[in-house]
Amino acid sequence: MTIPFIATALRRRRDKALLLGFATITMALLGTISVAWFGGYRINLTPSESLGLWRIVKLDRPVAAGDLVFICPPQTAAMREARIRGYLRSGLCPAGVAPLIKSVVAVEGQRVEVGTSVSVNGRLVPSATIAQRDAWGRPMTPFSGGIVPADCVFLHSAFAGSYDSRYFGPIPAAGILGLAQEVLTYAP
Image (tube, rainbow, N blue to C red):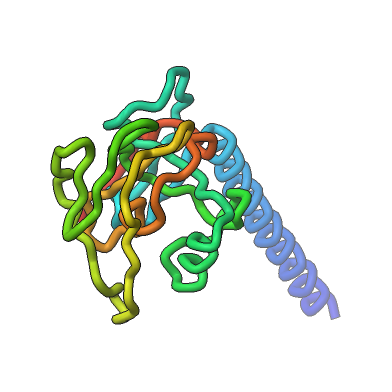
């Protein structure tokens, strides 16, 4: 009678230790994720920029062409369609999507021309060809071009399959969260 009692007690002690171990690991992971999130760290899983860990760095000056930024896209019909098509991932931006990491290639007052490629004030933007169809064969509608409005930016990624301002046009600079700084990344 004593041996089964001892075996049961040992099993309960082992189960409590396992439960305590799992709880400790879970709390440590949640703590790490919280510190990373509130510290401005994000993981990029899309090929528009290098894959891996990035940091949002406060932008304490006006945005300029050449800046690589984290930006929340606006809640527009183009962004809703992009979400439906799977171009944007779920996230905490107001539109329910994850922030984009894109380069600013034009700011307010600059002329953007979109044809088979993109040019800003007559200068060709490298790696900015226009896709006629997406990876699933669906037609893509490019932005028609024009002057970037006040308080807006025109965004670009060198990745050929990127969904950027070539298709959705300029977006409000107010959505910029900060500069995008690589921390630990890998470019495939």
